[in-house]
Length: 322
Ligand SMILES: [Mn+2]
Image (tube, rainbow, N blue to C red; front, side, top):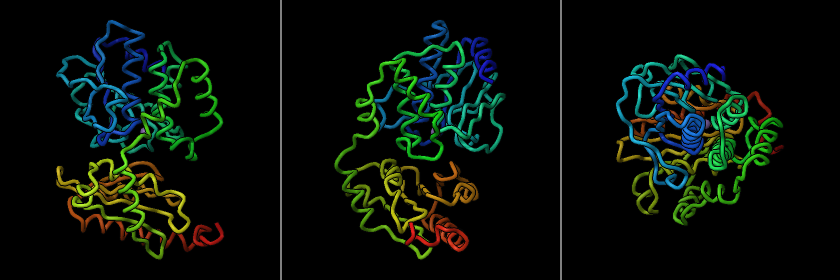
């Protein structure tokens, strides 16, 4: 598979690298690292990384402008389905390749490199670089490290294996990665966000079935002076709460006239429910965009009744023993 990828990269003079909507560090770092590695290896090629950026991640790296190309190769990182590809459609390209670690949803590209047992798209690119002639340098290695660390939630998720640590160790040996600097880029945040976290902790609702959720309306987002994307991303901070098995934030996004529902789990698989509402993601981390608050609450209802069944026939039901 990796050799087929390199063969196609060699064939094309123009390469566009895309990823999913709602940019996150793994999506961004995988496309930037792949762009820079291809440029480093084949300096004559025109390679661009495109998509809607976020002010939160400007210090990670710079995206390129999307131009119209006649005869280009598209590489899509970190995106399992067509509707979540940011800004482009594989159909408009001469050839397309997917590199992804999400569970398979649909075939969108001519070649699909899917490794759903890996922590991150960045981990797959680290393996591609190790297994092929693609070259790497310190700044590319730092991008890949950041994507892997972010998507594995700092080596916390079950997708992390001894192979992951070995791979990361080899990169730390081979390149000069400033880990402190990388963590600052990923995790430094304004005090306002921490204050909003306090608001969420104080106001989150919890059901008898151990579903916790909070509605974050636009007035609260404005009152705390954060943007709606960072408010929604706070969902990641509510893991390891004894009384909570699945949790969600419902964030009003006035600009796009929608509510973003971000769901996390520490047991039951929740991506199927997200898919039912036209969303998607991983087994333990998924999201949905809906038009109304009622629809968002409908998703909560479904999660809650699913949890009712789940807790009945699982050891998770007895939370006091944890
Ligand atoms: Mn990812």
